[in-house]
Each structure stands twice: as structure tokens, then as C-alpha cells.
Length: 55
Picture 1 (cartoon, rainbow, N blue to C red):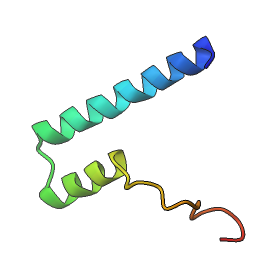
Picture 2 (picture 1 turned 60 degrees about the vertical axis):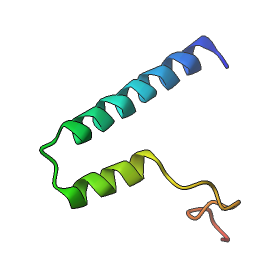
Picture 3 (picture 1 turned 90 degrees about the vertical axis):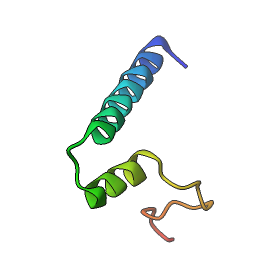
């Protein structure tokens, strides 16, 4: 990876960590917290891209 890519990745990880801490700290309704956590921790790949053409 290049330095720029590493820096961008670190920046994105920091954002995810801040969002996760905010959700844990509340006040976020349980339904919203569930959706946010699911977005931050998507399930393992099924081997295809759902949004890709031809799938």
C-alpha cells in the first residue's frame, strides 16, 4: 500500500471507531443502534458483489 492509502485507511478506521463509541455511549434507540452496528460490521462476503452488474 502507498502512504496515501495507509493514511486514508487509518482515517476511515478512526471514523468507524468514533461512530462505534458514539453508538455505545447513546442515546441511540436500540433499533438504530442495531442498524448502525450492522453497517459497521457487515457479514462475511458471499463470494459475489450484490450491486455488480450481471449478478
